[in-house]
Length: 322
Image (cartoon, rainbow, N blue to C red; front, top):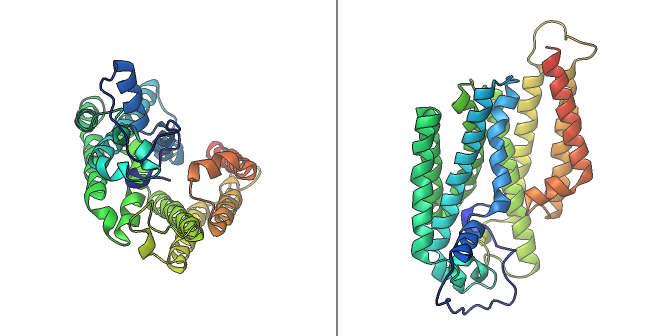
């Protein structure tokens, strides 16, 4: 899962060199398209974690709650877009010297630095304000905390060893908490532990894969300044530790049920099997150093998709028969 400081734009126009001339004039459609690309639409799928808490709580939503959840999803997407815009505006000069990042809209001149700052600031302020009006003050506070922490990451924290892993993980955990906070759902300790360490597993596996790739090309640190400070062994230890804790926490939750199971089978306990298999399957890609793009791993590996669907079926059956 890619965070602001390290996302590489792979959909940029071909043939753009490191030294780029800024266009003399920019049409409104061109500026809008550039701002949209800077907001990283491919990364928006991560905000789907907003739905995690209501799903984990097995809450049947009313029409009003469904609308509120959709609003929170949109507002979290706006906040993440704001961070990307401000990050690219701040790093514009450095990006122009990078062989890949120079193709970003701000670095290439398609979007002016001032326009990116303005758009990012508007989104960063408007999203929490809207959340305070439409949702709850707690939701607005969570969005403010997310923006502040992610901007601190862009400015300073991404250069601090280990802290960078924690901050990126916290971003995912905040997404997972947002839906529950907006709907007033109590977040269980097992949900927080499983979500937090599951996120750390994904983040550390991504860093490990990037380090493997950079080491193979003798280009360590080119895409991420702090990457060269880590070792393969350390990152492997982190993602293995996180995977183990996530599986353990989920299993403890699944086994935490009193009395005899309802229905034909203990669906809740059986859901441990596909959950564990999904972690083991993803670990195959992490160990091979090919988990640098988590969204691609999840969507393109058919076995992983089938395992995820099996887990979803068992979880729904557990909810229905509880």
